[in-house]
Length: 113
Length: 115
Image 1 (tube, each protein chain N blue to C red):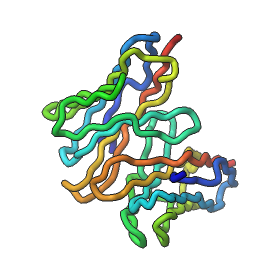
Image 2: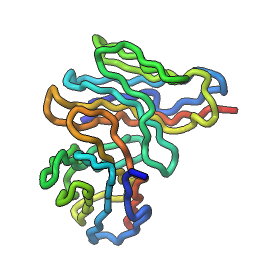
Image 3: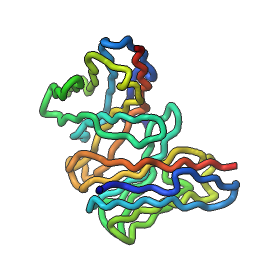
């Protein structure tokens, strides 16, 4: 079955540590996105990528970094510079361009202790 | 920096009633307006979507009404069921017009349908 796989589902980290969230898709989609979800704030765009080796900052990119070395993979690193990293992180993808439906993964919940 | 405003924040409806969620936007470059449904601990899933050249779209019990001049769109859930209890997000997509290709989401509405 095609879909988006995020791992780990739950992650705990100590303050000052970097952590990388994995996102893999087998939908052959060109575009991939990372969103952060906090209660009452909806989904806020962190980074997005339309093609391999290219990505753009979203509305809340500070303290995060990404790479897009392969079409199917778009990992997100939450760095120690992110002041409030505890959140639910969602990865999504679509065919790219003006195509419409965005498909989401199951999310990764990060808790900073 | 909220470009899509969603209301209400929460909604309680009796089984069989109509649930209505509203969204408003400012950016005229938006050219696709989807609604997503999210259950606790899961990723959102597309429910229904509309493009601005259409004023209404219906799929089963779900209807989007779109008012381009007012820059508003709404989701109507007819005959609401307890299984519809979830969080609903409206969104707007900025595509060809601006060349940005990104989705902006509303803040979400937590719907509870009472049995």
